[in-house]
Amino acid sequence: MDTIAERTRALLGQIARLEARHGRAPGSVALVGISKTHGPERVREAHRAGLAQFGESYVQEALPKIEALADLPLTWHFVGRIQGNKTAAIAASFAWVHGIDRLRIAQRLDEQRPAHLPPLDCCIEVNLCGEASKGGAAPHELAALARAIAALPRLRLRGLMTLPAPSDGIDAQRLPFARLARCLAELQRDIPGLDTLSMGMSDDMEAAIAEGATLVRIGTALFGPRGT
Image (cartoon, rainbow, N blue to C red; front, side, top):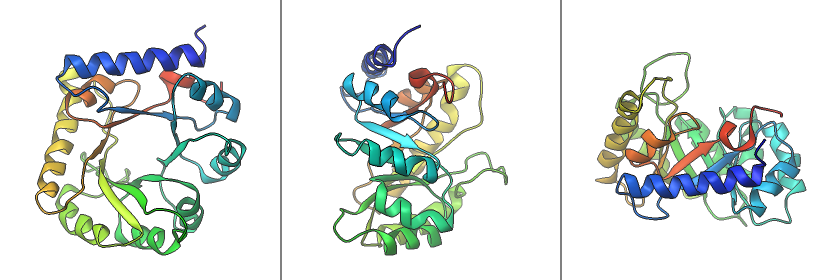
């Protein structure tokens, strides 16, 4: 079985090749290793192989892991659903939040971001499929929500994130990512500083990169199945 270090180097190389294949600038796509359910030593192994950005979904699991790895220069992304009673811990412990989908959550993060830390980088999660069971703001809500978040002093709105429904084949996979890219382009006309498309995971990374992803969130292809 490949080691985590070998998988990390392979993924970084694959991303570089996909950037070239799809006309992206070298280094324009960053890898975020989704380390939820995996222990600190596995994160250390990935870091030794060149990875510095990691994502977590569960606050209670993430906090001791972040503390255990405080000796490393890591950037932590919160990529899970945001519960109102967890916003203080998220605001204090993470550099990025990917799943904001309503203004009240953004306001809580803004109010609770410690003064000694830089503004919290964040993305609005967009629900492109319209399924009520999934999180995310509807596309028609984006303009007003983005303007309101951009005005919060302790947050820095960077862009958009989505989790599309699974589909087979790169052509089908590209469709929701292309739509998210169009949503970002529309927002960029009015809001300066938007530069991030957080989209693409282990099974649809190439489609996301082809459509402009700047952050890809990879778990299984890097760490293996959850908790292994």
